[in-house]
Image (cartoon, rainbow, N blue to C red; front, side):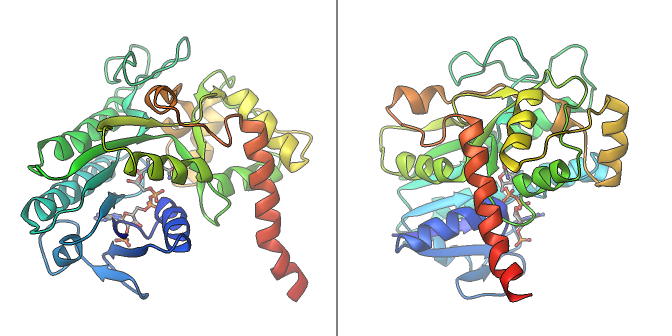
Length: 321
Ligand SMILES: NC(=O)c1ccc[n+]([C@@H]2O[C@H](COP(=O)([O-])OP(=O)(O)OC[C@H]3O[C@@H](n4cnc5c(N)ncnc54)[C@H](OP(=O)(O)O)[C@@H]3O)[C@@H](O)[C@H]2O)c1
């Protein structure tokens, strides 16, 4: 198949490109700075010659968006919103104008669309969309607004011959350098892998292998459209999540951090505490109902696998020293 991945140069794009190219598909990545074979230039805002790659493709998986790992200042929040909404809009226009449109358009969204909540899990049918929670910082509502506008841009696109699916994904865990797992593992090895702010907030996650398998599952199921949660079926409190990561990496202790320590750490890492403190208890209701079986349903096994593969990644470097 020919698969076009706008915004496919980042962490999730790397995971998908590796798996889909490895399976023998032709993958075209749309990027603002093409450097390799298989990459095409676009600006994420306007139509251009890139649209010819979409015409005649089988699948489009749009991942484009300004990284959320940043300080949530007003300009950054605006860039997070605009990059997602504008890129989704132009992808939709290109699909709508194609003589041979793709049969499916998978549009990245996020599990962050759901409310901060620990008492019950969110599935697609009964989950509560966030934005109205009491006792959370006001600006958290803006991340939910971004997710809603992002999904709306896809819903509103006029693509009558292309099935549309919104991927409400949790954190995708892969061993790649610079990915979220890599960052968590580094902090853990520094002894900083303890609970933050009590650790009662839930962490939703999905192993890269299941992320790719879920994408393939959704491509192969012409009856499935609309929002789908991509998250392992067992989200767990941050405290237990970090304990399992410490155990997998052989680090006995992790310094607990208060909310204020987290604020300082997030500031130093140019990131935002919402990513750590918001309780994301998201479960894959539709995937399970439709018969999808996770290879990594539980975090301890997933963490063991990822730590082992990070070690393998480092091995050739160690041997060449
Ligand atoms: N990583 C996760 O666990 C996770 C979980 C849920 C949802 N998501 C969402 O899934 C998407 C992909 O995640 P990721 O971790 O791979 O993100 P990433 O590493 O930040 O990559 C996103 C890509 O978007 C492109 N981009 C950035 N700013 C842009 C702009 N202003 N206009 C057009 N394109 C822009 C960049 O490509 P170029 O610089 O090459 O143009 C970048 O490689 C993101 O939208 C993210 O919010 C990620």
